[in-house]
Amino acid sequence: SRGSIRRTTYVFQIATCVLFQNPIQNFAIAPNNLEDAPEACLDFLREVPTTWDETRYIDGLPGEHVALARRSGDTWYIAAINATEQTKEYKVSEMMPELKGRDVRIYEGGNSPVIREVEAKKLGKATVSVPQNDGVVIVFKAE
Image (cartoon, rainbow, N blue to C red; front, side, top):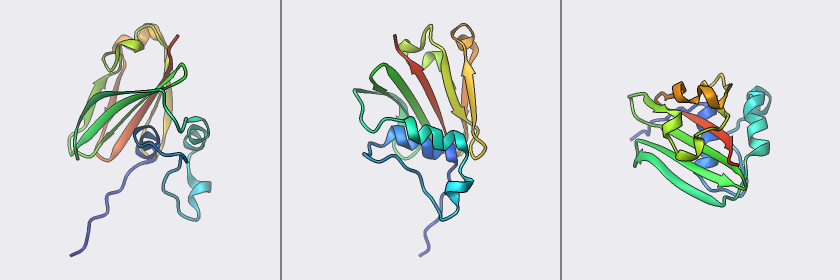
C-alpha cells in the first residue's frame, strides 16, 4: 500500500524546532530550498536554542495537535502545530501566565511566514490561528 504524504509549512517546521529536542536545529531541505526558504525562518533557526531549562505542556491530543512552551534562560518559546482538519484558535494571553505584561513576537503565515510584534498592552486581544498542517511560534522575554 502507498503511504500518504503530509505536507507541512515553513512555520510548522520551525515550530518543531521547539517541540522536538534535537541538538541540531533544522528543517526539511531539498537541494534548492536553502535559497527558497524565507529569511525569517533561517534567522529563527540561527537563534533558537538546542537545549532547554524548562518545558510546559499547554494543550494537545496525541496525533492531533500540540502546544508546548520551552524556556532557555530568560526567553520563552511557545510552539503549536495542528494535524487536524479543524483550525485551532488560541487567545495568546491565556496560553501561559508569564505572558501577562510582555511584548511578544509571533511567527505565523504558513509558507509565507510573517513575524507579528504585539505590544503588551494589546496582548489581551491577540489571537493565533493554526490551520491544518501548519504551526505558530511565539517568543517573549520573561523578566
